[in-house]
Image (cartoon, rainbow, N blue to C red; front, side, top):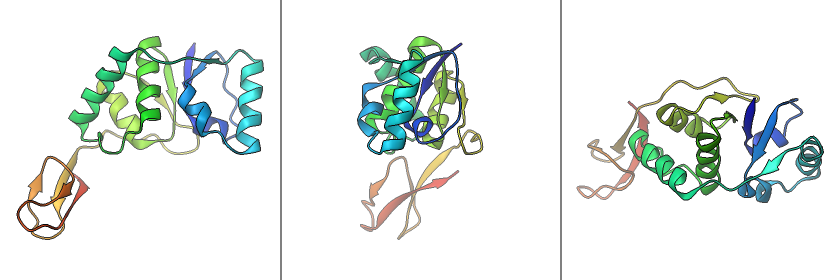
Length: 151
């Protein structure tokens, strides 16, 4: 079974087997001795570091716009989702935004230390006047901050 590993895997001691992959951007996030040691352990067992294709990244970004997670999905998150989509692999992650976008693109996720999230529908609401928008930022009506809220 193919599996793509988010950085949270390397910060835990959860054993994972199979055909394992991660992205160069995840490797860049591994700074402490524990995560680097776990990375080396998985590498010795055949972990491959692969960059996803651009077209799969575009599919992920399109889905993130639909779920309204676009503003919170990082480049690393996008890479992980794109690679899992490309390889038709399970994605091991605790990140709720990643899991939300994964639902839309058909990528199965497995939580590491957290519960599995349910599909979340976001709305953006002005903290000042209470109007709803389809984006975060500053309200064009009253100038207050627009915040992301559960639908």
